[in-house]
Amino acid sequence: MAKATARHILVKTEEQCEQLKQEIAGGKDFAEVAKEHSSCPSGRSGGALGSFGPGQMVKEFDEVVFSADLNTVQGPVKTQFGYHLLEVTSRS
Image 1 (tube, rainbow, N blue to C red):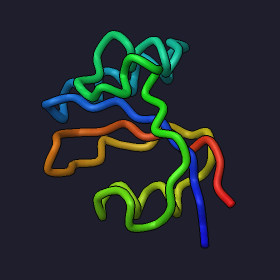
Image 2: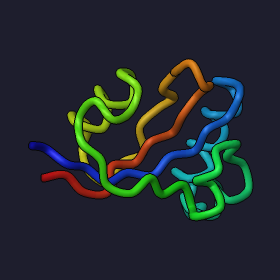
Image 3: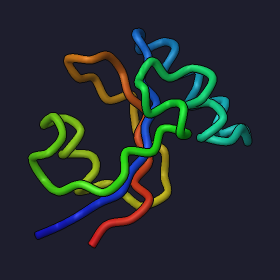
């Protein structure tokens, strides 16, 4: 079964998500941005979600995590929780 590790930043608005994506593209550290802005408890650990398989996260999340390029910030991805920036750090 496929497994992936990823980290994310969760915010309420698409606009804030886009702004944070630009900050990261401009050189800000993903983990630091997650600690400052993510509303998910994982923000305290830089957005790290650990290792998981298909179906363990919401559908919109899975679609990105199991298809996106590694170590590239993806998003905004809208889910029932808000807007996410995602970065897949490994996949097997």
